[in-house]
Image 1 (spheres, rainbow, N blue to C red):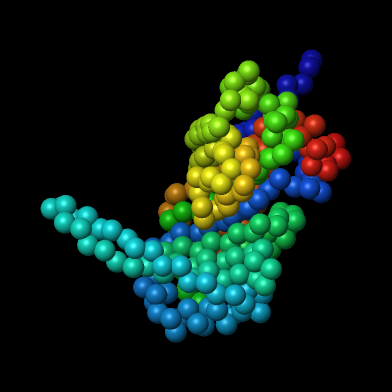
Image 2 (image 1 turned 60 degrees about the vertical axis):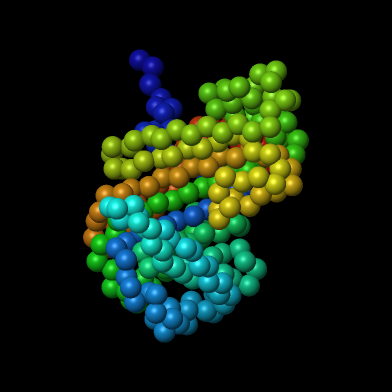
Length: 268
């Protein structure tokens, strides 16, 4: 009897990792959202958080945002919120702290082990400083970018289901095309939002996470999240982080073929 192999990226076991010497990953993100903590808006409180991470993340760049609030009579009021962004000297790693969320991201992803180690260190600091009890959302996001000659040949490097219209004769006339699909994963009680397509030079659909470059590129943006409210538990969150990272990698490997991996230095 032939053994049936599960190739569905949403349910299949994760494949062995193939390290890519010239990885197309441009950013990896993990974010935890929680009920607002007003004391985080106090600069003295933020200062104590900064001291705990300043050796690794010495550069501070506060980012202010104007929030518009509409009441039942459609009257508008506004408030200002601050996100405190801490970066390392090379601006490769960043921690962003707001009154209802904390994010860690990197533009130089080396390994899942390193990323999850930094995430766990951050979660321990949150537990120490804020004594979180509940979380509202946990998510991880992997963003890949293909440009140059590989962009011109992208339809031969990914699955036909993902290539779609860019594998047709229209490709040379195409300036921008973006797709988005959302998948439900009942076992993980999570969602995967997948966005992919071609964007022109000097254009981005997410300035905070995807920097614009001066040439066209193909983007693969995979975002897995759980919005189930749960107690803050570091062991549980790290298990979820590892599971999410493995599932997103499984999806990535389903999207690309072996030639894609070879182009970026992978030994298949």
